[in-house]
Image (cartoon, rainbow, N blue to C red; front, side, top):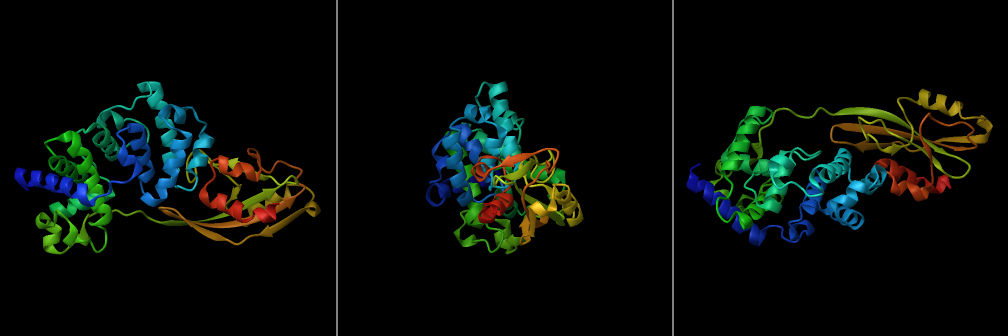
Length: 356
């Protein structure tokens, strides 16, 4: 693709975005890097419709980076609960603390420095820098990667780090070169919007795309083969036994998950690898005649790379011993203010009538 054609791509994307792209979202009405950063982290692997409510709640509670940095982790995780991919929330909190401690509460204004902060990869750093500071840097989130590989006919395997670098170079070459203050935010948003609404994974709407005339995949009629990536996540299944304990005061025993792994650092009911281990714990809780034990309906929770088959058991009564070495009793009024994984919160809510 020639330099003239490169420039034409940027101009067409900018023009299309101004009339056909998304221009109403709350984080598009600001160049405040705190708000743009918050939206970019929330939007990773999450739909816009889901993010809108969480974004508003976070800003109401944490209106700036200092407020977020000063908050406790449990409060941050509690507000995040239900949004999924909880590593994002832990990194969000760490990043806010680092911005305050190392940058005086002011976000760096270049993608290179932004990418050194927790939870901010190259593409997210590019988005913040382009939207807030009009820096001439590319992004390559999933939507943009799809748009550009189709446009360029880039059929190299992106499972290779070297090929990924080549695509970054192509993305850099396509960036606007004039009027960067206005063009960089609109071009960056335009590529995102094209990937979300026109250049979709299945059945792309090439007839509505401003780049169709120069798009290699559209001309060849093989858009769905892009991007090419041979390495795929290997899904696994796990079976977890969940012990839902209620004491005579109606409180539920919760403990913090390990610092690494699924739901790391969040509160959860005790988890056991098998039913025998769970029942062994139940047997140690005190006089069996003073507690009840009921199996609840098993359910499936699907993660990106894991299927969790969850088997809850509700145990209630006069529990004389501490159920586990760590943890504590929490009432229903506290469940929503601590970091609970969404399926555990839903489990407790659905059984609240039984628990009380």
